[in-house]
Amino acid sequence: MTTDQNIEDDKGRFRALVSPFRTLIQEIGKFGVVGLIVYVVDLGLFNLLLYVGDPPLLADKPITSKAVSVIVATTLSYGLNRTWTFSERGGRSTRLREFVLFVFFNAIAMLIALACLAMSHYVLGLDSPLADNISANVIGLVLGTIFRFWSYRTFVFPAAKDDDDDDLADASVV
Image 1 (cartoon, rainbow, N blue to C red):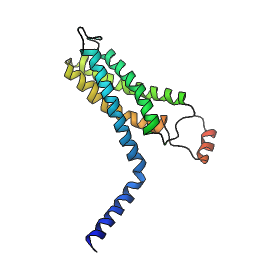
Image 2 (cartoon, rainbow, N blue to C red):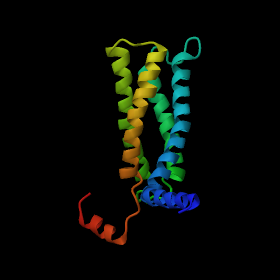
Image 3 (cartoon, rainbow, N blue to C red):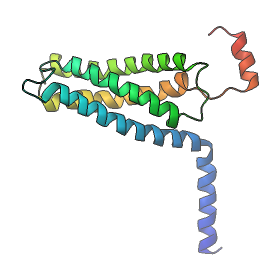
């Protein structure tokens, strides 16, 4: 066997290995890009509200600042995820129901970030700008992101159902 044949064989094996996960890999990549965009909005707005100005708009109110920044970021995230990340998935019967689920799961993810921030700021007494950002925008964000991806894929933008699946769904109580 020649080196070119070995390379082609390896490429074929790799494609066969990755093929079942292609859609998932693409969704993770798109979700990551959307996440980066929304992260910049969330981080920027959080710091703008909490630390910019004399006095800052929400000085000494890190929880309120984070809640506002997450609400703005959530709205942007829904639009980007609906139209790009999960555009190939079935979604829900109505956009309103889909958006309500999206907001519900984002609220849970926001509580994850807020819990990290509250633990750091109020329980551990780590109340510097760096500590607030690490707890809310690193630790809280990572945990919330993992939860969001799973919940969006599973509940908000589920895969399109086959006709047989529709019959089963009609027969079960949801």
